Length: 494
View: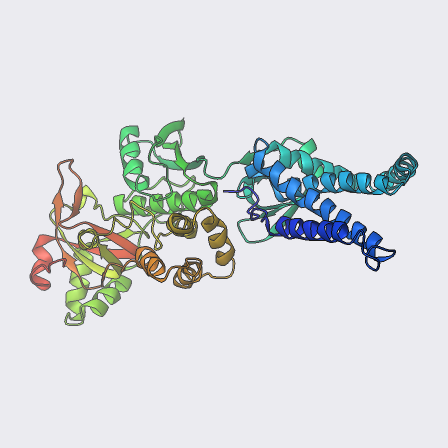
């Protein structure tokens, strides 16, 4: 896609100039011997009009030809196109004025003195303009790239004459003078290049490193925004036997730099939920009588009993209290696949709060796994927009990315965004097909009150008997077999 997102120049103006020049020259020649039109002031006026139309044709037509045939001309930015037309206009003006007898050497001398005086007064502006020309000719920095400042990637929105406009992650615009970008060391991330995300994890030193690596790979490996072609790394970077803790570095590669904050946040959230499920914690530096032994402890039994009676109103208060006291609470974060702790093998699981997605039913509907492939319902807004732009580009070409980006600035609702960008497709049938593609039927949600069993996979992982994924935060109650008589038979996950 064109780096500045500026549409290509159209030959309409050059065509009009060609027709006008031809018409005026024909009239000039045809009326040369006419007793009325061949005299002053009509005949000289026709000559002036023909010369001006020819000069305009030289500028517009010559600009189109130069941009079309010069190396890299198809990727020329708006600034470069303007400079090409400015040079051609100067050449056309020089020969036009010389034709009418103007002394161009004296004019150039006077203009040089005037230009020098103005240049001294406009040094900062001219420096930014010249730097902007260099940046545009270099073709390294493009619209969509990210400029790194204070550790934050700022997306380039516009490359102008005097400055570069970028948008921060919070929506605020930042203006960079071209002179500062050209003269200083510039760190940026090209659009579409993967970037590395890092997170740190402190765990009890007694947990073996291999167990930590396996746990992290299971948690992080299915995040949609990660680059699956690159290896996920988990390394032990700090070990302190005195504090009974170890610190690990998690490194993974994100497909787009825009997704970096979202991915790092997802990793931290998933680690929290995983530690809660595994009942792991790093002991505090100081402990007092008021501090809990487990920093990740769940709420009191009364709060869980309230959730239980809300989804199973047939239970008495005493039965609910008995179930809660003999069971364990398991939490899952948004987008996590339901993989249960091995210590809960043989138990049944009751959904107390949140919603689950039955991935088996979702896959049989003809749509890919909600977590393994980006869709308009991706947890990340950036991933959803990228998926939408990709599908639109298959129908209207590279302009799709610009159309989606512009529409997304005013349309936060994804459904409304789909309808807005679909208007870029002129064919009604293709537009309907596009909307069917980007707005697939969402899988049915499994509500609180659902009861299901678990089973071991060939790899020894404990999972539900049908694959499930959390839509939002999910609270499960792991009920031992000897307490199942209180709830009755296991319900089917259908």
